[in-house]
Length: 167
Image (cartoon, rainbow, N blue to C red; front, top):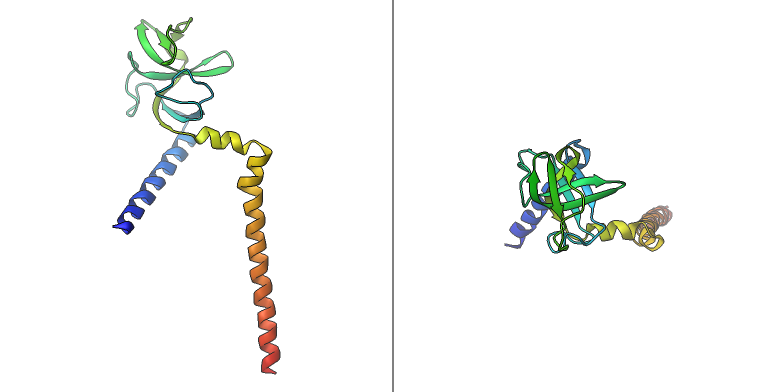
């Protein structure tokens, strides 16, 4: 039973990593880290959001209720469509009471929400700090090198002692 669960979890992780690699390298799919709370509770601060092309086989057509991502000045915004007016969309964050002040032309949509991975943005943000870099990269690297050097020293001194005993 435990082995079956381990296999299932391993397969799910491999599929998730494959999907992320595909999204990263595909020009039609994007990965974003959420830096605001406007879409709470559907999408939270620190979540990783994966988007696909509008009308794609995973995302479908844009209609009211669809979550879309678009550029607004220098910011990337992910909000829910509440109304389609011709070639423009009226959007709103789930945590906001009022719709966004500007309509969004459909041509400016950079992606349609597919799924999210909770809390990944926190890890990414932590990695950008000195403490995060030390904790996740430097200290494990030092430990790995230390254990490797220790093993090499043990093997070389152990071999030298065996040879001196045999002569």
